Image 1 (tube, rainbow, N blue to C red):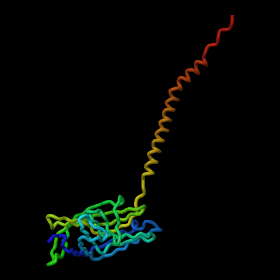
Image 2 (image 1 turned 90 degrees about the vertical axis):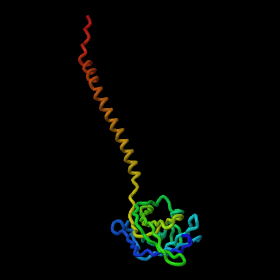
Image 3 (image 1 turned 90 degrees about the horizontal axis):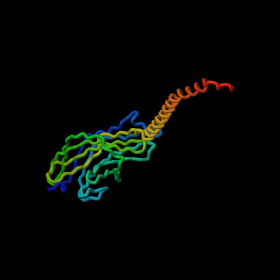
Image 4 (image 1 turned 135 degrees about the vertical axis):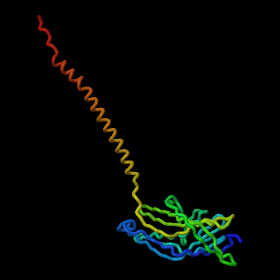
Length: 232
């Protein structure tokens, strides 16, 4: 029986969600961080040819429940992210899709092993997966949202390989560093202006020093010029 005929039900227990506290958590007095942490089991269900939120190019869809949810007080935005489909590049949200763009970036990868249990219609079997813990960061304006996903790569089939990611482990709220581009531009322009002024002063000093002997000689010649002979 093919992998697509399996009805997958996996339980990943004891994933502790943590939130960074202290200076990295409170971004401002008007927008304090309110991280909602939780610890629960995650059920993975495999669907085939289901138009639920999103489907991959070959009709395979992975649904993860429950999703991790958090929001910041003073900000009406609430982020609910479940899974990442490696084939379509879509991030799934609970009831909506959070699309990928240039604000997302991969920070780190830490591989480990995980065994998933599935039901193939007759009995419960197990398949070994490779999990890579991937830190995915999302930044918007002066706020930074960091999520951690795990990538599960199916290694039990010689012909079919599936990749998907599951939200887990760590959520951090931090302030994004300010853009240094304007300061750098001002510094570069200021440096060039300073160099031009310095060069102008140096040239002026050189000209003054070089002309001074000639001016002194002309003044001496005019001062000691002999008087004309009186008329006979």
